[in-house]
Image 1 (tube, helix red, strand yellow):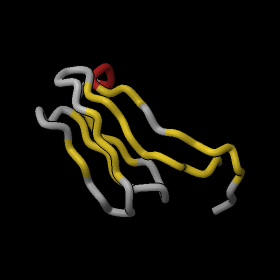
Image 2 (image 1 turned 90 degrees about the vertical axis):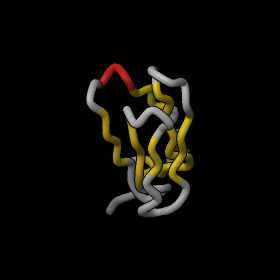
Image 3 (image 1 turned 180 degrees about the vertical axis):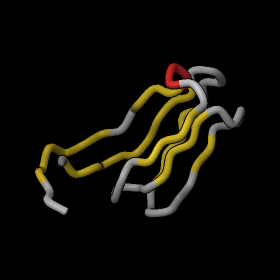
Image 4 (image 1 turned 45 degrees about the vertical axis):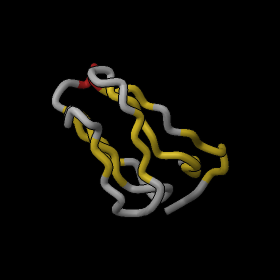
Length: 66
């Protein structure tokens, strides 16, 4: 598993880009179709329709073993 440097995504419905920067920082887009959570510790996403979410997360390539 690579280290997460940015945990963010874009809503295909409203165009909102949301980012979770810290653990348990739950972010929802303005239309409520998607959410992200976890900061740089983990990536947790939610959506009603998978086509509503565009992943914009970034990873540094460093392998971590949890």
